[in-house]
Image (cartoon, rainbow, N blue to C red; front, side, top):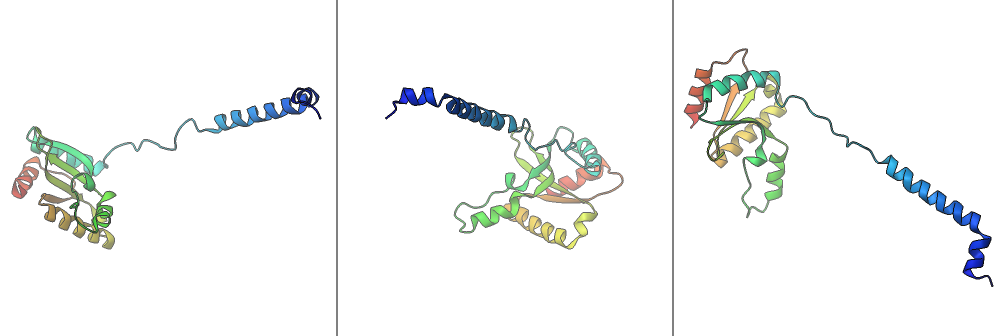
Length: 166
C-alpha cells in the first residue's frame, strides 16, 4: 500500500492541476461579482410641475415651516400597535407618498401635508387611492391639503389655503 507521500509524488500532476482549477474557479467568482449594484440615480426628486409649485410654496411659507418633498405616508402615519390587522394596514401605506410636508422648523413635527393633484388623479384607481389617503389622514388628525396643478401659483393664495386647514 502506497503512503501518502508516495501517492503525492506519483500523482503530483493531477494534484497540481486540481489546485490550479480550484484557484481559477475562485478567481472567476471574484471577477464575476458586479462592481456596481443595479441602481441608478433618479434625477430630480420632483416633477417640473411639482418644482414650480415648490418655488411658490417656499415663498408662501418663508421661514415659518420647513418643507419636505416626496415623504412616504408610512413615515407620517403609524398603525395602532394593538390592531390585529396592523400589517395589512401598514402595507396599504408603505409604497405611497405625499408630495410636500410642512413641518415645524424647531421640532420637524409634520403640521400640514400637501398633495398636488394633476390629471392622473382623475383616473378611477387614483380616485380610490386618494379617497383612502384622505380617510387615513383624517383619522390621524393630520391636515391634508389637495391643490390642483395650475400653470402658475400665487404665494399669497397658497398661504391662505395652508392657514385654512391649520
